[in-house]
Length: 373
Image (cartoon, rainbow, N blue to C red; front, top):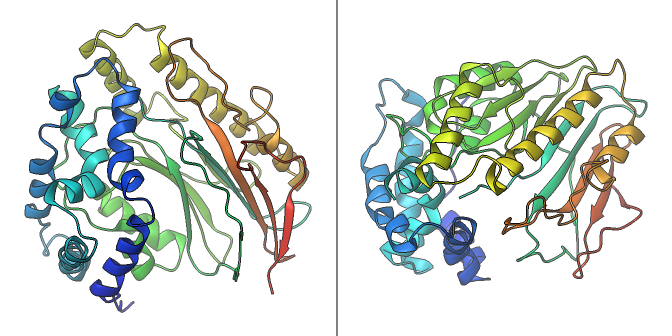
């Protein structure tokens, strides 16, 4: 498949426009959140190597012999950053924070000196009582939340390979050999139009991406879930009993795989390094993530799942359902999670069901319904 990359100047201008809608949030929000999540760490010590790490990422370009598809994307990434730094404009420190903060914290920051927040879940079912369904909960602290006043304006039906994901990282991960910031989602969509091809590519490029779990599905109704909490491991899960695929934020559904054991060891390493108790907010949080994945897995392991069963699970308040309402799970918890929006697409009906918290944080009793022309 031939790939035509977008103009770097246009991409950079679009990013600059987004950054300039709220420069503080985009450039400082992640830093403030990391500091708030880990009040026991000196902020200056935590962030001391961020600029150097970002420089190292750009210098460590991947081998075009080993990764031949990456060559045009390497040049594209560097060109976009040059343009972005000029038009936004961004200092070296701001660019490093915008591009590399999460990776730096995971590979070097915490190891050399935060609890990552649990986000979201995705479900794809090729068959329900109303045909194929794709649905997602988006969870986050409500700090910067602004409801979308025009959701799904000019919506179109998704076609080809569909990638949807959730956050799933580790406070501390071993730094892989490959740290160049390849845009793996764009690279994958540019080269792959079906699930088997995407799995092959993403496995071969495994060290270039992580910190997320994803669901892939295509026009032939094939699907997989991929867990990628670490940049050093990849777990691919074929469809479950109901025939579909799902993923949950910050979860490892099989804790005894090499990936699961590595994650458990890294969690404990983090606690030991910063002298945090096993019954503290961090482990309480991870246990809640495991519980959410168990609830979702139980649904997907039924012989058949109805649309209403999925809607009920994702919109019912925690702990009976997976709709987070800012519950404080531990007295020392700093950031609380909210399900900010839920969106479900029924392909055959060309219809979207959408729940969204209002500006006061109230989750609606009934969804908005949008028909796609």
